[in-house]
Image (cartoon, rainbow, N blue to C red; front, side, top):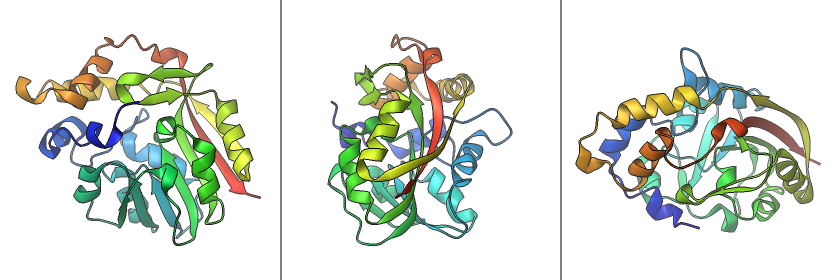
Length: 233
């Protein structure tokens, strides 16, 4: 697997702001007027009002800022030093989720397109279960385990995701799939990447351009985006 800290830290923030927009949402949106914010609102459906939320794999803080706007307090966890230093809106813990044990209790933990980076999700959930009541995951699943090595991603069936939650002591309460979550986002990212000068299209952003251009050989139409909510037993 790739070094995710280096992967998420190699391109300058100024380039990412062109690619992702000023709100810095690095996750798939959904069709609509505010596609990236709507994805977070869909996750928020399963979070009690005015909750303490642990954003596991918080990225550049886009989802956390939406949660704050709707009355939640947020703590982020990321294994990218650059992301941790960039976020000023809420506390961020820099570290690997596999080794992270919360020092506080939380009403909910969210995983917005970070579950697919976990090499041992049961270990992560085992560490969370004494401290976190609700787990909400928005991520991509596939019919079989599929490695996307360029991004350090392993796609898994939804049954695998459900099983990892159960083994750690969570009960899956609800899950549902989305359909066309990828095409509008890939188009948006590609148009923004094309605004960058060629010398800024390298590393992570260069691989993202290849993904948006269909050059990685990844058949995203065979994958589905799923939202899953689980509660501690």
